[in-house]
Image (cartoon, rainbow, N blue to C red; front, side, top):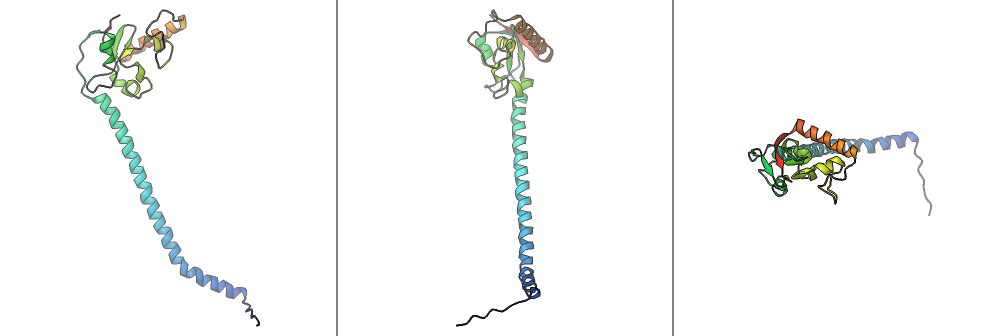
Length: 174
């Protein structure tokens, strides 16, 4: 048996290749167009989802800030009563005590509300934590007896900050 090899010229190969591609051009272009449409639709739905998630998160923060607050009259607070104002009970404002004064920090719910970076301060005397620049109570809490002079200075600065920014709504009983 003999095999016969047909030699084709480069021009013939080019022509054959061109015919193959020519038939596929439409398929390739349609595939690219469909891919772009799908990518665009998927991309915009992801953007919409992210926008909705941001709106929901903002609404949750607004809900905490704008919730119908209990009307607070200036009063004395026990530690037990103050603990009810830690942001976990809807309808109650967020309160923080520092150096015996209780402040309504509801306007700072992003910071002092549940899950906020200073959420541990809400509903309690935060004096020791603030003086030591810590976000959790230690075993000496709430004592201020062992504070260093610089910690006392820090505490005074925080007390001035709270007095200037938030409404003083009562005093914390010893």
